[in-house]
Image (cartoon, rainbow, N blue to C red):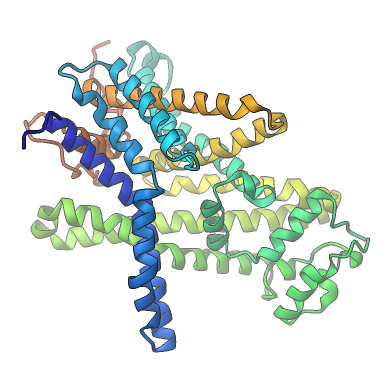
Length: 467
């Protein structure tokens, strides 16, 4: 049977849909499988595996089609313009706008803000690259500002994200907030105490009925209950250190070790599997160099995140105890409800200096959408009164933002590929079937190696112009 749908449009749709489905569904299936295997190992029974295979995974697969509109949104938005014989960016905008409106109607409960912010950040990055590619701008703006601009952006984004996590976790996606909690290693009762101090229900020197919150935690750690009683004074460092001896420095080393151990398997997978699948020639040609490169990159990335965690803990300890309380005599409530967590949230971003220049840019772009999510909630929530037009206005603004962002990045990939960072450019080129200079469809094998030039790593392969 002959299809009237162009082959290019159909292929693009399938690739975009498949990527969207994988991103949104595969993590849940993998997590379910691992949990079932762990339970089976602990109980020495296959019941959990049978339940996962017969019940949970089929439910996830069904929901991934009937309740998950993200794959369809990605497929329609990225393939719609291919239905026309001639490309024009206005067609990309219109098809993306229509796709978002259609998906909202089909999946009214679907949350798309994460995807919209992700694309918005990538579109802003394209504009930033376009501005910096101007000879006039490059003559006036030092090159180092771009390199360290990533650090500044990362620090600002981290400040917004972590401060919200400490005191207003509802401003973050729930899964992301839970991930931060797991990686930080903090007991949730300490977080609840900090939030109670900020909202005024925990008052030092007074009995407000919350002594059980940290009192039970003290008992669990084998510490005297009075260390967690607000009547007796400030929350002791010993409690923050989980009852471990030897002070703040020993605590921060322990936090560093735990963070490194948790994240190393993840980063090993991140650095190993893409080149293993898409750049096998390097492994075959020089396996020793390949393995050493993967291990070095994994250790460096793990050290970055472990340092990130350690800086938060150490900054809070220093500010709330040694500097703020003992040296400057600042009110302890003020230290705990704002200053100490804020300083820790700001300084932890400096750990990005450990990463490679390419990874710095990618990490900044990774956290920025989540920071925008939180910042938008912070700014708009005081004005949200449940009025009938609020939801419609928000949906319209998001749809237009989504469509403009799609248009910007797609047009850049078609006409100014050097303006898009290599990792994102490779994925979009593969989806859109854009031919490389060699005439072949660009595969996802342009993963940068550490010996590439800084410009390539940053995605700034700019045309050299004579001054």
